[in-house]
Image 1 (cartoon, rainbow, N blue to C red):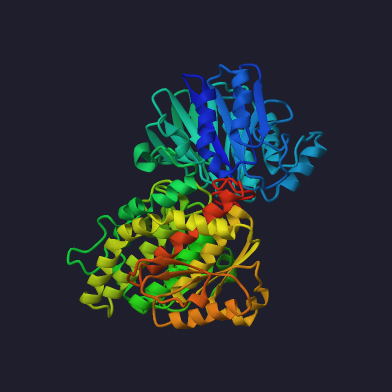
Image 2 (cartoon, rainbow, N blue to C red):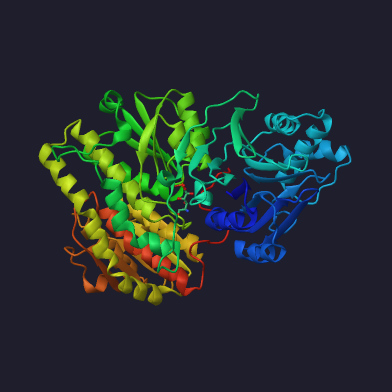
Length: 614
Ligand code: AGP
């Protein structure tokens, strides 16, 4: 996904745009660019690499323009070069545009426009879209709406997703945004208005935010703005106070957002839990599910759809909800579910989980579910996100913006909410008040236990030092800790680039044990239940083949000395919170492992914080 920010106001656009790009850099950081309306021409500055590279160039040029657009790119079409960097300018110099998304049929337009004699300077679909708008503009008569009409003619022809901000040289006081499938939000301030892919771009500069829906346009003209659909009909603009959406994200004393977000999990989880338990202290009360009690009581099945870390959280949720509520649960890769045409069976509830609320595969899985008439609920961390707006109900994670590409606090809060959902559903069924009460107590103790584990961060750093030379690692766990093994492996590989795989511990003997050697450490997450003995036996099988073993285990589990080279002890805890606690050392292990390799844990190569393309 890419970052878009546009400025139209009384002041100078430059600083607001660069600052906005810095706040959006987590969305993509292959290259960045900015374009300003300078009266009789656009000035463009584009550079590969991080936003700071661009900022230095822009400062030297120091534009006085009060109208500009900017972009930080995560490459989809075309390699990482200056010529592929946005903004793109049309062949006639009349339009500049920034784009987030993928225009699937751009090849058709490129051939058509090439036959009209238009030459392209990049490999991108975005430059084609910019020239398609310019082409329609050239075919339209003069008039106030010629600019917006050119956009209204070009966009419906496009297949795929777009979030765009566009400027036209003939309209020095106008900026137009449009979205279909890629988020776009208008920021309204006293001195300037903004268009951005994420409200964090204009926090502190705008007072209100208006989120566009798919198929809508935002036309900003001077200090006025209007929202219409592609046919030009006025659409309702719902303005939300910006301070409710996203507080400014300062790094503080941490050296990375990932480290900050790992250590703020006690507070984050308190926010997730706050005010969400029933008065009798035996159940949870998730406001976003209100009004759906009848369906929730009578469910035949729950289908989770998610991607990446969010899917791992759902997999933990599967174990927890089935145990607490005895409702069958299945977890789907959203990208698979949306095409699988899964047969409807009984009363199903689809729960989509997405930190960003903008992951396209997850959104499309929700859309497919709604086409099939299924009730859809969302669990997301972003207020006003597409997921929040497109599901029938849902729950906000409330953990504050998660900037680090590697998801940490979001995972913990997603698992926590799954446990709370399991508790609520369980108490609607056979879960006793006493059991409900003990789960409520366990959840309320969770933030303190998380803080306790995080205090052992130095021990984890030492373990990361010990194993930091490994290029292949296995992560193994059973039951609700098997998804934690998957998550530990994902965390490590996505920020350190070492190869890591997660398996159910018992699966080791069915193939992966062939990988065991002195250079391939195995990280075992031990349950603390009657299954521990079996996992310890798996550890001994690895040790018998000279494989190094690092065990993560609750204090109460006795790990024989010969079964592990290193043991990291967790506080004993209720089974519903154990996966969250067990995942903490794996987050820190991956963090330190990557830092020891000198890597940027916040912006790992090839990744973006939210994948809004497919
Ligand atoms: C997690 O560390 C990754 N960055 C990635 O797997 C992420 O969880 C996935 O893309 C889903 O994102 P979402 O929660 O915003 O939908």
